[in-house]
Image 1 (cartoon, rainbow, N blue to C red):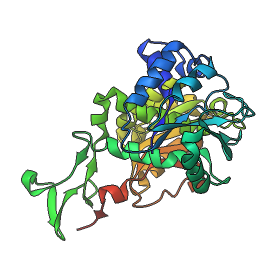
Image 2: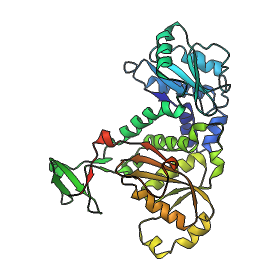
Image 3: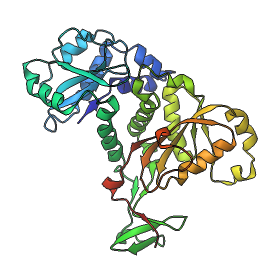
Image 4: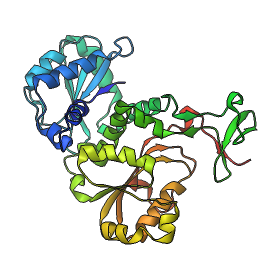
Length: 349
């Protein structure tokens, strides 16, 4: 399954032009001839032999310029066929039959209907109708794509440290038929995620930042005002900081980095300044990799000591070894759970 995100493409253009507050600009000013050109160029990158259809997600927009022009151009694409995603009574007039299939969602992000299409779309329309029920949410539809895209990023050069005999070091150990890396806590892992390497790939950073942003925005549900309900994005380490900085560039919300592990919080050197900044403030916590859950607990404990109010926790990769104890599961959004794909093992000797 493929999803093309016009909003992401517009944000990328605005960031490259050095524009401030690109998220709001992109949502309010989409629909130029250049936007259409960029969208069609992105569609050309899809592999037509891989799938019979792809989704074009217009749900973040209330309106776009010249929607008829976008529809007429997209409707000329035969394979793969575009399927529109939109919120009811926003971008497209849902009372008018469109030459493309349109999956219409409610303001709460729940699927209402699947309409439109021409004779080329009859089998596709039936297939979509059979597969997606009215209890399907926009997140349900997007989740497999998010998982696949973020998992693929891990296979960029240098992102995965997989111990092997060829590069055997003192930190590696051979147990039960495979090599493991010894971690500072004395435990052994079958692979190690080095996300700093992704910092060298601007498209990868944008992909990650965009998925974090739409998770923060709760997939642009119209009954939510989440962006107005928090003051800071908080990250617990420098690796998460460069990811959060990309989020900051899109949202125009300040980012704070807290050193939850090092000597500074232990000596309370940083506490006075951070206390003034975070006391009675509402924050969103971003953690790049979670395995045991202790990673989150340390950050949450420190933020609690500063009297900050955590309203949402977003983890990029969750390796599902354990669960945090200091936050409830409904507060945590894990964008990707690649444990099975990586055959990840966390164990003692």
